[in-house]
Image (cartoon, rainbow, N blue to C red):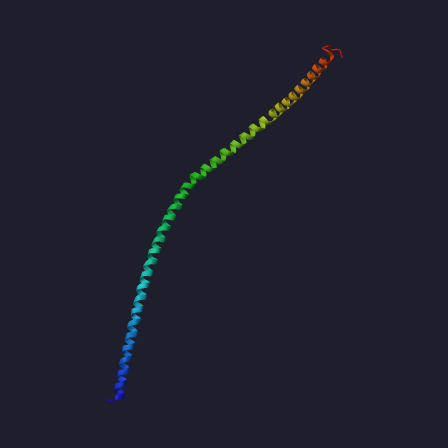
Length: 138
């Protein structure tokens, strides 16, 4: 064999070894990427299962709240009705009491004014009688 053929055989052999090494490295990287993808897929699966569990819990909670809301709404409606009745009753009482109360206050104001006038007149008469020496001859 000629030296040229021997050199070509060595070059081809070295090239094949380099290609084999590159292929092995690529396969190792592919295997690592596949392993990482598998771990990510497992994490996503766990997250999806957790999300589904949370969704079921939320559905149960919403159903529970809906069943609890009906009595609360009825109670609120009754409270509103009672408050409305109480307000109407208090307005009726106030309407019935307003006129007599105003009349009473007016009578009291008149009595106060009359009492002041009477006391003023009596006071002036007493002062007048003291200045006259007790005689009531004006």
